[in-house]
Image 1 (cartoon, each protein chain N blue to C red):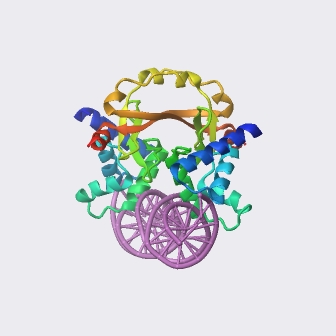
Image 2: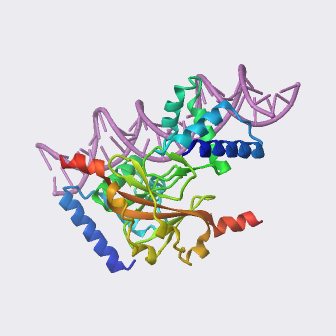
Image 3: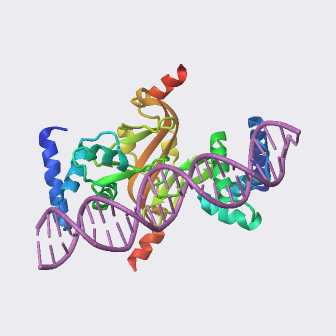
Length: 149
Length: 149
DNA sequence: GTTGATGCAAACGATTTGCAACTGC
DNA sequence: GCAGTTGCAAATCGTTTGCATCAAC
């Protein structure tokens, strides 16, 4: 992400908070900027460990609480995984996820043909759709290489 | 499922266990047959509550352990959800899931056009694919109706 | 100054584990 | 009889909550 784009996102964030009547705390800003920089779908705990270095008084519960707040604001997603820890990512380019069943690593991939597909009409009877996500399960190249040895 | 199909599945199950060197215990049989009958993606706890009536000495840990065993054998899937409890389903017709963000209810739907689609070539660099699943998020008709009041 | 946000510790719920008793083969 | 399986209880892990203090507005 360019420096300019980054700054734009931050301004957008501040506006969202103001509109929602939320205080712009040091912690929230820190967590949001870290998420903008992170490209590895960190878990709450991972985020906490990273930010601890910058702000030693930060607590893990605040990270959890802040992530929940951000999710309500529609700033990020909690990703569905089968592993125990939930992972988070801010909205960005439309993409999907490859989840390695061996190491749990999440990879992004784009799939424009899917994105332009229309959902089956049978869904109309079930309910209204907010978003769709594709999760591909398999073994990542790194784990396959390890197994090969 | 027809009575005949049901019986076939059971025989298949017994064969799988035998091949894997697993004992055919009362509990395993009970859990497997319940899963065959269940069409609502029960969680381990839900399953336990249902089976408790038939087999009062059954313990919840056995359900967890058995489900884990079955998953390793490739008899069932643990579904990815954002809710805390994992849900299980035995393999059957190829289908996808609609997850209501309000009540957490899971609905199945089929989407043949998706099933015949080829995955993006970029996935080849990431790893080898075992299976793909589509999760559609939204609000189910029942919850939408409730909100309307 | 007020109100909402944080940090701490304690609670919680889902899942896993160690171990002794038991049961299918 | 033996190895694998169960049931029980206790432990673990991720996440949430109550409450007093603190910081943003």
